[in-house]
Structure formats: C-alpha cells, structure tokens
Image (cartoon, rainbow, N blue to C red; front, top):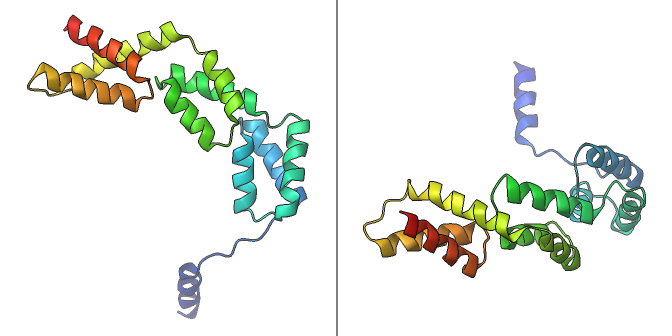
Length: 172
C-alpha cells in the first residue's frame, strides 16, 4: 500500500527538466536534423526548451550550419514544395508559416518566386471544385463568399482567389 501512495505523489508532481549542455544539444540536434529538415528557428526553440545556456546557443547553431545539418534555404524549398503540392497552400500561407519558423524574408521571397503560378492556380481551382460539392448556399452570392473565404484561408492572394472563384462558379 505504501508504494502506491508514493507513486501517486510522484505522478502529481511536475517533472523537472534537466538543462542540457551545449555538447548534448549539438549531438541531439544533429540526430534530429539528420532524420528530417529543421530550420534555424526550430533549433533555437529546441535549445530554449532544453535550457541550453543562452551564451552557447549561437555557437551550437553555427556549428550545425557549417556542417550543413541546418540550411534554411534547403528547408524552405522542401517546405514550400510539400505544402504547395500536397496541402494545396498558397504563397501567403507558406510565407507566414516560414516566418514563424524563423526563416529570413529574403529566403522566403526567393523560394516563393520558384513556385509556378499556373500550377498554383490549377490546384486552387481543383480544390474549389471539390469544395463546391460540400457547400450549402441559398444564393450564388453566398456561394461566392464561402468559396472566396476558403481560397483566402488556403493562403492565395485576393486576385487569384477571385479569378478561381469566378471560373468555378461559371462552370457550375
């Protein structure tokens, strides 16, 4: 009986996180980055969570960049390609997410310039065609509004969204 009480007390107490040294953080980040792409912002957030001493974080990050474990341009290209092709996201949403991951604006602009506008538009039109079947709208005005909000939520700019909505509604 006594051991159960001790276990309950341990479970209710929050676990203390042990701070990692710079060497431990470097090896852990190398393992993580070898398995999947990571951005410099991801590495900074992990080091913050691991309580790596602040003065040593930039040194760890520089070693990762020098040894090409972390490359924001390579990460951004893979991220944009994946989100564009698989999720059907537009440039605005991709840029916003890359910004939140700590990627610089210059890299984001270069990566977005590589996205093919015609392919993006075709993906948006296809997503809108599928969405029309699920929307309940009493009027064409209401349908257009719902489709436009959906296209904007996917991260497409207003002009591209309006064009795609117009062509989708016209086909209907």
